[in-house]
Image 1 (spheres, rainbow, N blue to C red):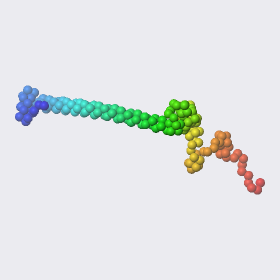
Image 2: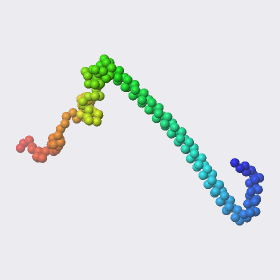
Image 3: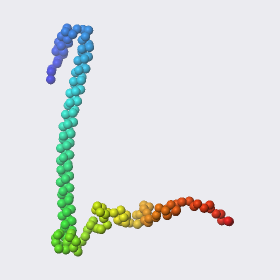
Image 4: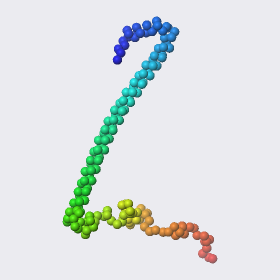
Length: 170
């Protein structure tokens, strides 16, 4: 950077006073000050942008590392779950999976509950199965309807009577 001391600034000011003249010197000084301020703001903006880009690149690296770690954990969990399911099926059937009586090929072995016939075409449980799985005491406590009533019956039940009320003495 340029090293400007008091003596050098005084020399520059004296030369500017002689060259520019005393009547135009204040206007030129304001213009130079404004230009120097703009240059400083531009330099600080560029520095801030560079630092943001560096931080953003670091965050991207951290994100990819985190995603890789999450994928590794997910693979490990799926592998362990598959191994445990295989061990459970082997324990129930007494044979290895794929053998002659295994539960996986429709033999007489254990069929897990997630392969039940109560699923809809896309593999999810139907609404009726989910509703039936809720205990009746819970339904009563949370005011869940346990029986269905047709729309016409519901309207008739809640419609005020169309006949005028009779008195007891008529």
